[in-house]
Amino acid sequence: MGQTVPPGRKPAVPGKAGPGLLHLTCETLALGCLFERRGAAYIRVPVHRRQQMLGCEWHSRRIAGLLRAVSYTFEALEDWTAMAEEAPGQVALLYRGILGRPEIREEDLVWRSDVYSRGPEGYELVFRAGSYNPLNAWNTVRGAVHLNGGARAGFEPAPLPDPGGRLRLSAGVPERGLLFLGGRDVTAEVLRPARREGLAGPPRRLEAAVPDDADWSLCDLTLPDGDRFTALGLFNALLGGSGGGPNGAESQDQGLGAGPTGHWAMAGLGAVPFLPGRLVAEALLRRAGIPVQP
Image (cartoon, rainbow, N blue to C red; front, top):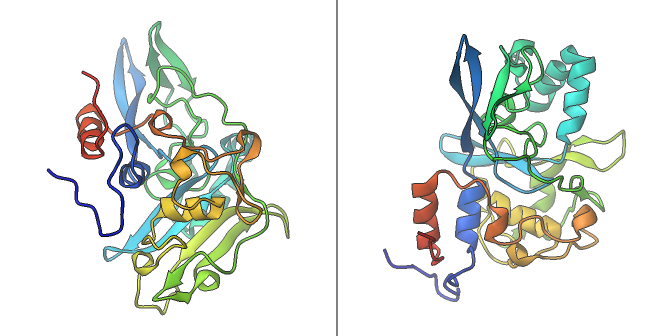
């Protein structure tokens, strides 16, 4: 299959992950497995996780096939794990309020049995029965309440390094200059804080949503660089990038503060560890013009 390049755009450079590959990777849930013990046997338990940015993750919501909202979360996994140990009922209550889903039950958010991961030394207990499940469906497939990037969940042979905290909006939610509809700036109509740290603190969650009475979708919007809207593209724009983010765009005063790392969390292919399976990964890499190792 040849590479189709829109007029005025540069083709993907061999050896570098193009924006299309990064976008597709970020919007694909990684599928891994943990294990439940049944007597002497270990039974696979499929689990999902997002494969997005260190310190920021999101969930896209579609209605009738149209992209109507993207919810970004900067909430730390450790905060929710600690809360679940002290007040599990409060965790379920917050899930219902954050996602607007009153049907969420407390038992939906915990492991039903002891759960193990498999490593070089055999099976290791990682979650006890009844403990909080950070990879529950409401925080992966059906929503994004908090980060799940650092949890040991059968996706890597060893836990990922600590990313050094989470991203934060350093100057509040921008009201202009990010999202455009037919040349009209609609940033203030679409982008809003969904949950804050304290009454007036920086946002812990951010929502990009089409107004209820609008007949258009987020895909009809364009970003400051002229590209069509994608969740990854808006993240890059918030961070202060201009399309070159995968190579390490620096954060700006009006964007997201990148914490101790000082640059965009995804820096090239080496920071995309969860492509969905070897065959799919190789196909994506070939499509982007990146050599595939035998």
